[in-house]
Image (cartoon, rainbow over all chains, first blue to last red; front, side, top):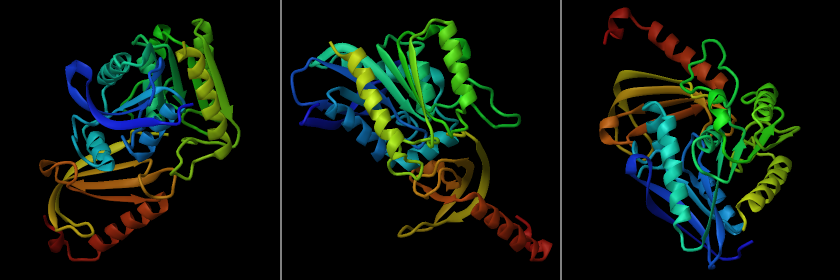
Length: 247
Length: 89
């Protein structure tokens, strides 16, 4: 826990060295502290996501959220930026990995860093969290109800993303998965498939599915918010990152 | 879920939001996904934009699925209620 923290908007080097905006929150002490990269959901780099970043600082981690839509919409309101990025086709997977790498390197360069960095993402960011953990040197990853980590899009579904099944052998750190039992994307069958694949590959993972919760149960500003699931989920996230990102 | 389902097209016309002047719009994006403001898990979202003027040049709607169908039906009914020659362009 950290009673005092500082949060600010900064610029970091993202994929290909591009300068992109990011939101950084840090405990006000000398550390050493682990770091958390927060991947925002498809609706963007918004107020609720920044609240999550500050909560990680309150939990005792340096935390950063890169603005994945900065290139398409620098300085725009989060909803306008999300609309622009969507119209442009969304965030390419390789660019996402590069942006998370830049954010992780920024965390490791902070004066109070202990060198350990984890990643967490929500919704589309859940899939992107797993993606990043399959390609980057990270110490822990959390997937909050990311669709299409496994599974096949329904027939005729105009989806522009692919599942990550062929990339899962590269998962390089423990994975915590938090899911709603009533969610359909990912549904229980996709969660079970991911569980089985990771077990087959010998990857350390811990999954929890909450009865009575659907998709986006962490979203405090949406009707999908579930007090019971979110409260337990935050406790599990704090414990998981505490074990893997602490000294 | 984030559906990623997005349908885009070119359009011609004008749009206006509260407290802003009219603007010409050239692009349309329609998608069924999480809303920013509407109190629903997923909505039918419509953006009419002028990308040349930047991301903020946008008028947006977030409608429940039933509301979106009503809008689509009303648009179709309005178009079909007038003589064909008025619908040119």
